[in-house]
Length: 312
Ligand code: APR
Image 1 (cartoon, helix red, strand yellow):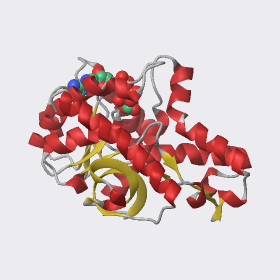
Image 2 (image 1 turned 90 degrees about the horizontal axis):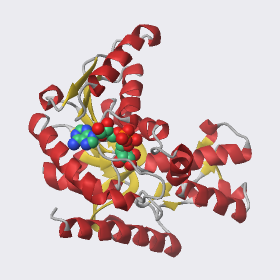
Image 3 (image 1 turned 90 degrees about the vertical axis):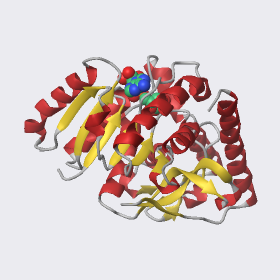
Image 4 (image 1 turned 120 degrees about the vertical axis):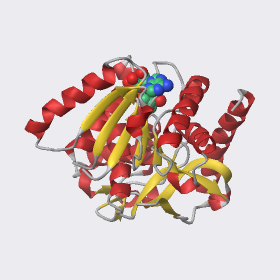
């Protein structure tokens, strides 16, 4: 392949993302982890599936050897500790802050022109750590949250109305977490707003389920958090960049005044192409939606303050 994607963290999300990248022949893949043997073992296992899955992407797994990430086009960062039952994303703050800082330093030195897609939680705060540590311009650092949140909303809409998921479109703004802001009036089935297809009560129920989508899966799995859909979401972003698709997707982006928010990562619609975030799309919000987005931004701001107190 003429493109290279490094995935840091060979756990559930990272290994699944590596598999999807390879099977779609989007790039050669390097899988990096701190664990001895695990990234090499998973990469070899994936390479042995290639003849059956019919792809020629190369997959290499290494332990802490960042020289293998040299000149990557994209680096997807999933390293960290996942949530356990009863644990909030914010509990992960201090541990994952240190991990993201170390990983970003390594990546920035070997792949200074790469685009970073952050997956580790708490997402919006980890994006901030990656931006500050890498010194990369803001168009080359982004977080995966909105694509996952809107995929969850779409899945629930399709289940509710018994229609193809392909007919659904959903719009979710804000931080990844309990303060996310699903926008029903911009969420559609075959172009029809769901506000015309479902009662306000049913919409509220689907919105609530979307908001708790991560926690619902943590509660079921008990030993970790969701990974199939998060990996799909990160790979959709990578594909839009690698193929310069100019695709509009909700991503965590560093805002400097857009939506009245300054100096924070918050989930907003952006245009993804070969330069990364090529445009932040500003849509008109109602007063209620504005207040919900501001509430979401305040939660992210609080995390950033906490990190500064912890020595960011
Ligand atoms: N460098 C590289 N890899 C690391 C480091 C580090 N400094 N610290 C931890 N890791 C690795 C772990 O060894 C593990 O293999 O990150 C991997 C994380 O994988 P899982 O524990 O399976 O977690 P996963 O479900 O993949 O979630 C990863 O994504 O969705 C978020 O909240 C989730 O922050 C979590 C991240």
